[in-house]
Each structure stands twice: as C-alpha cells, then as structure tokens.
Image 1: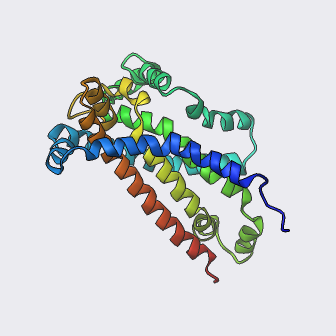
Image 2 (image 1 turned 30 degrees about the vertical axis):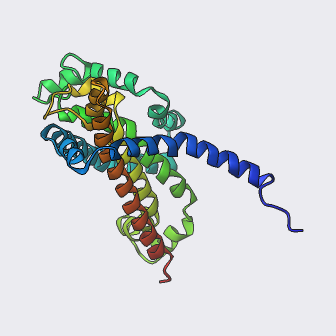
Image 3 (image 1 turned 120 degrees about the vertical axis):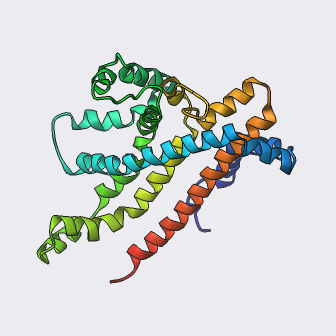
Length: 274
C-alpha cells in the first residue's frame, strides 16, 4: 500500500474546510445574501448614489497611487535587504512587518500625529505648502504604510532564490547592469510583483482604521468607501451597507482574478525556452 503524503488527510482536510467555511465563506455569503435581498433598482440607487460614487473615486485613486509607490519602493527595499549587508539590516527587515503587527487604528493615530500641521513631518511640509493630514495625500500615505509589506514579502524570497549564474552569464556576454536587470531579473520577478501588487491594492481598498484618523472624512472629498459602509451600519441600514461593501468585494475579486491571469501568462513567458 502506497504511504500517504500527509497522515490523517481526511481529518485535516475536513477541519480545514470547516474553518474556511466558518471564517471566509459564511461571512461573504451573508454579505452577498443581504445585498441580494435588494431589488436591482434599489441596489443600483444605493451603489450609484452621488456620495457612494465619490467614495469609490477617492478610494480607488488613493489605492492606485499607493500601490504604484509601493511597487517601486517595495522592490527597491526588497533588493536592498537581499543584496546588501549593512548595520541595522535585521532591524529594517523586522520593521517591514510592523504594519502586520500594529493595530491599524494605532497606525492612523501615529500618522496623524506625525503629519498634522504641528507634527514632526507635517510642520516641515507645511512650510513648503504641502498639507498631508485631512487631505487625499494623507489617505495615500496611510495606505502605503499598511500595504507596503505585501510587495516586499512577495518579492524578497524570489530574489533570494535567484540563481547567480544567470547574472554571471549575462555579465560575461557584456550586458550592463541595467540590461541585466531589465531582461534577466525583472521577468523572473514579474509573477511575484503581480502578486504583491494585487494584495497591496486589495488591502488598500479595504483599509479603514489607519485612514479614518488622518483623512478628515469629508464627504465628496476625503471620505473612503469603508467609512461609508460603517456609517450605514451605524444608521442600522444594513442593506445599504452590504450593497456598498459588495462593490469593494467585487472590485477586489476582479483585481485578483486579473492578476492571476497575468501571473499565468508571465510564468508561461519565463518558462518558454529561448
């Protein structure tokens, strides 16, 4: 009899499926069921209201801006952590995970304190006419802080596992550092970058605690979609809250599905023989 790879597979699989259903499927199912209880006309009136559309615009634009910044800075940070040895490297590596451990509300209060008009950074920026707290820029900074680790942690292990022989071969053929990075390293990093970008964007879409303190929460200007959902819950309008939340859910699923397709294409491209 062929030995099983994982002892107790039926039991472990059953427990896993139970927890997945309890923690993931059940809440999502309740959200979808509540939103579906609305008729098509009522649902559209809620999700397409002027205030809701304004929150979509603020949330998506800020999420795109923060993800674009994290793509560049996160790749650079992962590169430095993997390729260089310097004093404080381990401390910097640990700080990357700080947004995972720090409660988002605490992060929001800290960012507001730092970037307010009399804060350490905010006072310096205000002298050159840049306001951060209670502006869309503050939302972007809060999203950057909470979503940066996703890109760093998805790219870092791939960089660590890259075969140095590939770069050495490219150098022996006369390739410059820029050409080697663009034609050798970057294609191998593309699937990991796509995964990190999708996770970073999805996290930014749903971020709440780190944003509400620094955003100012002004309707049509700095109000995010997650806050509008919370407001509808406080008003006991559960159907409206579920309808607006379903827009975020659909957007995140579409983003993840699109990223999976791009990852599959990138993997086929990198695996294609020269």
